[in-house]
Image (cartoon, rainbow, N blue to C red):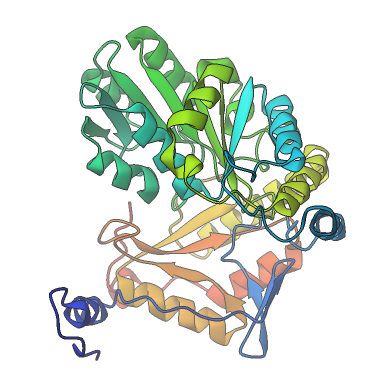
Amino acid sequence: MMTPVVIGPFALGEALAEREQATLLRRRTPVDVANGGRIRVGGRDYLNVSGNDYLGLAGHPAIKAAFTAGVAQYGAGAGASPLVTGYSRAHQQLEETLADWLGVEAVLLFNCGFSANQAVLKALLGKDHLLWQDRLNHASLQEMGSQLPCKMKRFGHNDMAALERLLEPNRGLIVSEGVFSMDGDQAPWAELATLASRSGNWLMIDDAHGLGVLGAEGRGTLAAQGVNPASVHIQMGTFGKALGVAGAFVGGSRELVEYLVNFARHYVYSTHMPPAQACAVRQSIELVRVANEARAHLARLVARFRQGAQALGWRLGASDTPIQPLLVGESVAALQLAERLRECGVWAGAIRPPTVPVGTARLRITLCAAHGEDDVDRLLEALGPSPSTDERGGAHGA
């Protein structure tokens, strides 16, 4: 047990001890090597089913070469914020590439998705606006929504009837995700676009986990669902998942981007992402756009896993994406299952509250295109048949 050791006004040790008592304390694990669906920790190799490198591109030679060439040309860092001297030709070229790929007028780059989401909400929403959010939206969106002067109204997960009842005409912004990060399911974007249009409100998608994986040329959730990108006013996506690098962007109209350049404090007052990183992301997009076989292979792996896990009696979330939540229920049971898999050489992350609602602890199993069918079979063998509900201590997932 942790005991309070720092005396002062913040009771740090007490808060940590409470988390440990509730089996919710988090600790970091240093990774030696992570590449191509494999991970090495403490000198031991594992099958990695816990990351977000969905296309297995993080170690791609062409991306590493582009990064290296970018360092040679621009140096290791941007050296300044983008409105000083931190905006390079490499950044401009990446923005143009993204706009062409996703069918938007303009794009703005950010250091991460968390800051991109928060920058948009903070820059747009004042005290007279309303913000509507899906209850399972990312923490970056929920946190900023709770801090804004406007009123935030949350609707039940993917419940379009509930959202429609909450909407008021011409009052603000509706925000949802393309692929939900802990559940792997998708929001109904045609319905969301219709509701936004009818009510005269703006619409924003966080497509961090759909970009690169779904749709023609990997354009993401909107493309996969046949939704015109012009019907969604704001697109946010990240480069640290299927694209295998790091960073994020916000896309939309030229007017929106120009407004954010002037009013998005997370953009204005941050050192820009390294130009070499922009070079690497641009190379990654070239690979993603032609990665049709990798996406098809990944879809086959997902289907194979779901069929096998359900045959073993495990309860899965309603997801056909690489994010496969294996619902356990209680935090202790999720930790025990993750540890048992590690003993079998499989690294899977146990997800517990507050990341997910109480009583819905799970293994967040993620597959990637670098995995093979034999890897899925190895995972299923390590899982084995699901124990009874009583043995698991409850399996009442969401």
